[in-house]
Length: 358
Ligand code: PMP
Image (cartoon, rainbow, N blue to C red):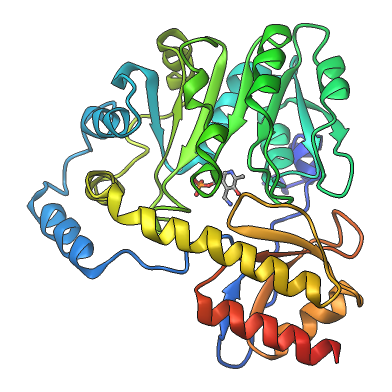
């Protein structure tokens, strides 16, 4: 018998920190503002439809190969063609696939505008992509456009941009995305939070003009479906076909597919909740500024904030009151990320912050 040695693990994977879940509140949960989820569950009538449809399916059979029904529904929802869509087990699966296809295998390089979604670094390590970081600038953590263009100047480096950016909340301009696509072989654009931004931030409008752009979207945020894993990538037909080769068949199961179909069919129902969250974002932002917080301008369903006291201590004090927010101090000094919840959760957060700061 040979003992397991960590030498068997590729060094870039070995050096990743094992995913560590933050401590949960010990008492009653008052507000869960740490995962950028929707505060609104899927409505009961939609759950009933999904359960009934699921009951009728043959659970012993694999889902349809290539998820044609789901891809058609997604395409119809965003006015594209099914051949332009790759569906996946959350957008995370598709991001990993794209990094593998375009930058992985030890030869490629991924350019990130940091701080950004922490899992990108993990995905780069798993895919065997080198990584270059371009630091964001200013109070709103804007992309350093010149520096990111320069990082991609070799014509091989693949930029992965998040817009609106997790955790900072700002967007990349579509004009910049176009410029980047002139230099880079492909541009990967993660728009998980774009439903909370302005119509002009939606990069799907670029797809006809920019054949080397991939836009990643998810049903986990605005559509309340994080508990069932559905995301998609939209790109030109040829690019979508190549990306699809790196996604294992049947990655969207019967349950996730039925939920996605039901949600997409009723997508107009979600407009109010999304608008309410965007309005709450502005109210919470103003409330925090009045308390002396620095708040980066956000077009997502979360705020990236620097409190006027030590962020870690504030987080602990909120936790003891049943309010969960994300500690981002390992990424940017003294920063927290606070998801926008339902009005009552936001009120609980604001009044707890007021009380702690007093
Ligand atoms: N991209 C970003 C920026 C995210 O914040 C998340 C989830 N937190 C994802 C992608 C992955 O979302 P999912 O896999 O649920 O679609």
